Image 1: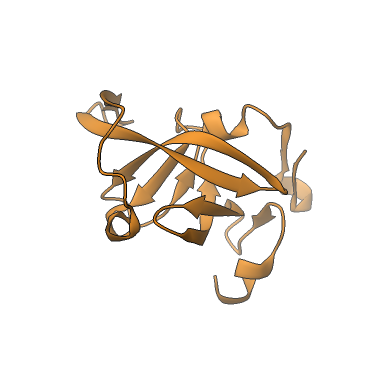
Image 2 (image 1 turned 135 degrees about the vertical axis):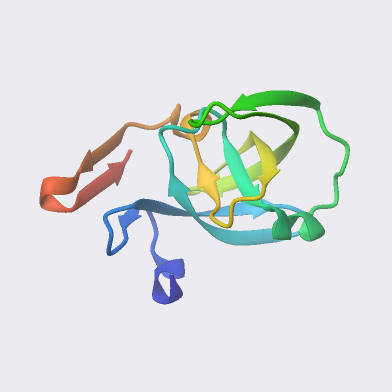
Length: 125
């Protein structure tokens, strides 16, 4: 992801996966490149290694997630502030064993998301 950290707005990687760079307020503001995952119904899922940067360890509640393979798991849900496109707002967040940060449908709900893989185009407006 080297030089892509400076990209503003969504972009496609070499495998046509959609990504976006956002800023997340953990104990400080952190810039994170996230896969845009329309199969993930929540706001933000961060790998557990970001947990050490998080200063609010009191979850709002626990929520059961069901994965595509049918496995179910309870996860603590937190609220964090994020910045994207010069807009700051709160979203729900959880920590996962996955090594890739994800933004999901709750993040996308305020945007129109267009993905045209045939022409390598992506937009989020």
